[in-house]
Length: 262
Image (cartoon, rainbow, N blue to C red; front, side, top):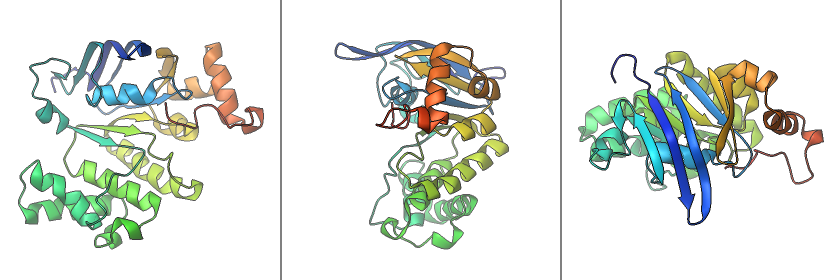
């Protein structure tokens, strides 16, 4: 990454699925070492945006640069760029027949071609990093949802990424398991990891993020310092969304907006 360059730079990004225009001209950036949280109601395009950053979805128009490389350039070595990006999904996507250590080492060996001993050393270190040193030999079926998500984070970290993407990492977890996962993410932020996080955890966004981006209808409605956007939003659409999320009593009977992925 060149000095002064953004870790992630998104310019005039559009994405359509047939006639459904999900992203409509997104512009923002994430600086090295910065934590940016993306919030917004269901269907606002948050998850689609994140998938475009890793080219899991091909943008309809616009450019995305990650770690100095334009991943939307047809000539880019996409596999090389993706090795610099860690991604954690809502679902854990662990191999059920592999132990926690096996899940954390398989991509190191297959993609990075690391020797087994080196991969296991790095895998053990990262499982310890997420608080699972005592679960190295456990299979996913014997782990709680929160533990499985922490294995998924360790797996991403073991690849040595420059940027971490999180797509609603706590949305599939029981409430009592959320704290452990958010605790790991707080630790990564304190270590200086560059993170782009789609989340509905407003306290995490306010306390951990450097900036918050509020999306609605496929556009960025508001962005700014985390504490200011969450506690004192300037746009009426942001205020309306946050009033429902932060005060469940004010939400419709089907639940607060933003509690489901978008």
